[in-house]
Image (cartoon, rainbow, N blue to C red; front, side, top):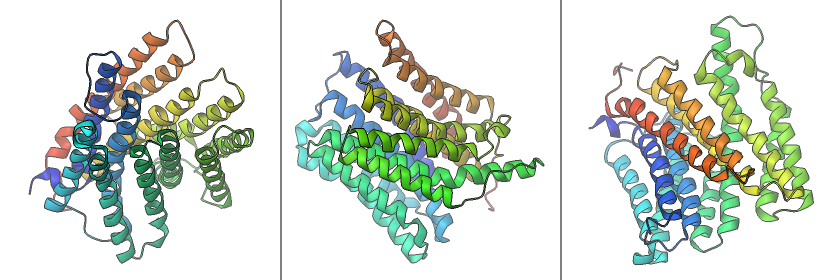
Length: 380
């Protein structure tokens, strides 16, 4: 069996790393009138869809297919079944790109089949392993499938909000577990006395506030009450992060990038709240804080860390890894700035695109060989 099909993180992290810059470059070419894809979606809708249900979905699949065996003690998906799931993801990208030729219904069925198959497999493993607490991840994945269906039905605004809200909830949920846990373990190894706070009722309140705010924003839209809920959720998320000893991690990029990725959540929700009350702040700025900021940073943080750990390499960041984190942060910051200024907006947008492409190209160059080769310590 090829090493690429040994574990789910290998093909899907590699595909996420390849598709993130490719999809962006295709969209820029469409935006400039250089390229016209035979898709039934408009250029902007295609861009949003492929970032959420192409790039993010691939990274999510890599994470779930790696995490679920750890949660349940069950064997991982590998070999031909894994190859079949990879083929479904690839078929979805092709179907959406050619949806004007093959028909919107056929494209939707092919595209949705990937996330549906991932959800069915993950739910089956979690239930067999009696790992009941992680069924909430399957519930969120089901909402994401519904948002994808809405995209194909033409309800793009609701679909986009629903997808972003769902991924924000996933980051708040999973990040709320792994960021303080990884930080605590590292600080204990280095003899640091002050450790991140243990999970308590405040974490539950923060999650409840995040769920309420993002669901209200999805279903109700830009209402003053929704703005207040978003602001409260942002404050709660920021206070939660403040309990995790972020400044103590500055010497290890593999750790501080997790804190930075999580920091984009309260910043994005705060900007979203401001956009409700201040029309001068475009909602696109807030959305890119959550997507190019929180999602992309956290995805790269998890993909680099998981790849190192699951290929038998030391959990420490190389110069290339640190450069990846700095580039994606530059891309997100420049993208936000491009929406707030008029004169230099186009220059900042293209600068953001260059940094985005460079970040993921460097990820593929540095981590692609690790995914294509066997684990360094195959006995484990």
